[in-house]
Length: 127
Image 1 (tube, rainbow, N blue to C red):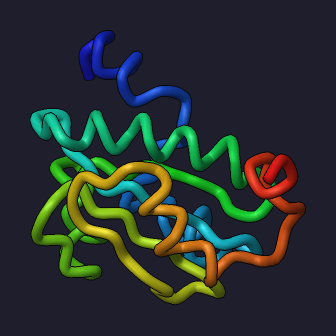
Image 2: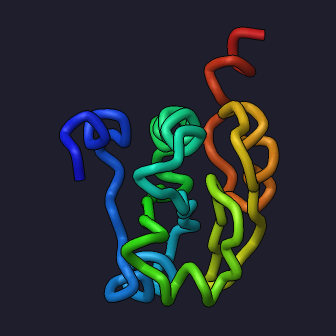
Image 3: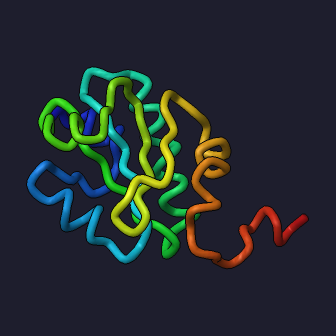
């Protein structure tokens, strides 16, 4: 992996075919999985949006990344045909997915109903 890609992809945990069960399916907390590839430009855009959500929704969900080129088993098991693809897992099952480049607000809208209740967002508190 290139150093510039590492900077672009931030500090989110990378999961693999080998540890997907442990970190995603066996998690007590919902997990948003960002399916991406090094050659995918839109994945970099979505990656920064996902990092925003990881901070905003900390404690309500975990966020991990899975490189589709390096992890064909999980990619195939979940029928990932287009990237970027974000799949939210809750209680070991797929709850919802978002395909394509979307802003953090649209991703949040798609996944929020599947997350445990949390404190009101700063936006709602200031409204």
